[in-house]
Image (cartoon, rainbow, N blue to C red):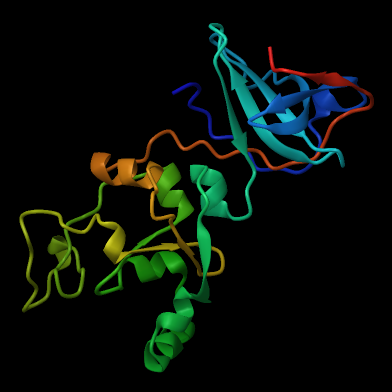
Length: 222
């Protein structure tokens, strides 16, 4: 594990990389242009650089340690893939389309958001990118209706053991539009998150554009 920063996903050029000469490097088998050392994230022996493609778009970030290690984090094609640095796929329906017509109409009438659905789903746990970035302990809920024990109804059943944290009863959902994402079968990052009950330092890669003027020859990262 190198740095513990959560980097912004931004395609615009960093101010300190604009109008400067940058060199081309091979990172993870990918030829990219590396900008100048980021003054905000580079500290405590960690050097951070933004990476750019031929069209001056920021495509990732790289961390270098004092002992010569480095790690790249790339902007990918969806929010979970970028956040967890794994190849997640997109489901062909949103969470809203999974609801019955009656439940959907009720959500529209009440103006429910994805966060509202989290406390009202009966069989599935909804996890958004924000939950992974800022994890919190899940409150014990009724095994039938997921109502917290502090607000239990007649007939609610509670288990002493939290059995909710499995990949089989979780929906990974974008909190903005309800898009559902599917983890790869060999996902190791989220499996670690489930075992610990909290997210590892979530390292999203910057997706952004960017950098400067001229570029030098291709070299191996120092």
